[in-house]
Length: 368
Image (cartoon, rainbow, N blue to C red; front, side, top):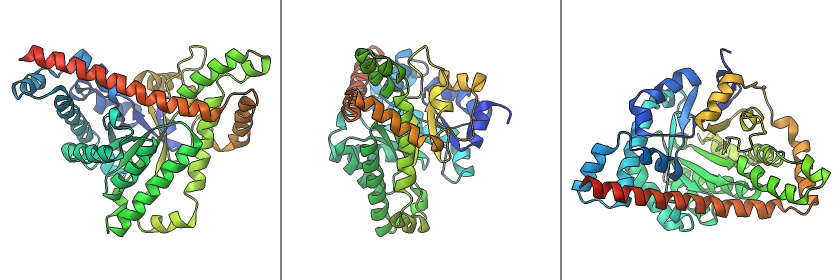
């Protein structure tokens, strides 16, 4: 293959960019990444939009219009972000068509403050889907307990979903269960199952950040030897969960009716420890039917010097189990860590959302 990213795609990993801005769309940069970097989708979140809007590039005219209309900051965010996502969906439409809906996806997230309210999450998911009005949009719903019920409901009405903030294997199994329940309901309603897609975003680097901190506190030779290993082990075992949960008779029946497997997506794949390889959470997580959503910096690192294996997951299940067992033998609870990371993940997005609301409020006031 001509470059490592093309090789990654050839080995079954869909490359999605973890970033979006109006300037990236309007400059043609997003389209160029499809051609030059094998990018086949985009994910967004409140932090990404806060960053894009803080730079202000390309948003001035719309902010002036929204200010003149008397829109609140929350209403303005809804209008601005759905325009960007709709336009990005149009950029990826050819990818969507050529892959029969498998790729060419753009994700937009419900407000993070709704993470523990299933009913409001469902309502906003439907509103976002209707406003973007593109087949290739995916609505991001967090994998909280309340989120599980919302996932089932949103899938059941034919809306494709990106489930975000998954950290634990147990929660991942519950997410798959919620998806399959939604597909079953969609089938009972007579919907075209082939049009419904979903990915389950399993977060990677944050697991190492938290567990390595605890391993350093233990400080023994064994503990220090386990640093930067738990996240890959956890993610690889998540892929095994994917294989197991979709290899059952009940799913086979739905698949024969046109249903699509919910693909695992590796998120938070930018490396935070400067001592680690900057391609670690990409090249060490290669397998068929996988998505990896990367910050541009990580994507460029893989393009420049990534060494991409055919498969770096399925032969490592026993090793991954041993790593997790060794970490837990030191008194570090993986369950406690993943619960904490889910809680912190929601809180971080709420903080980003509040910052976004504040900055848009100021911009609206200035535009009057």
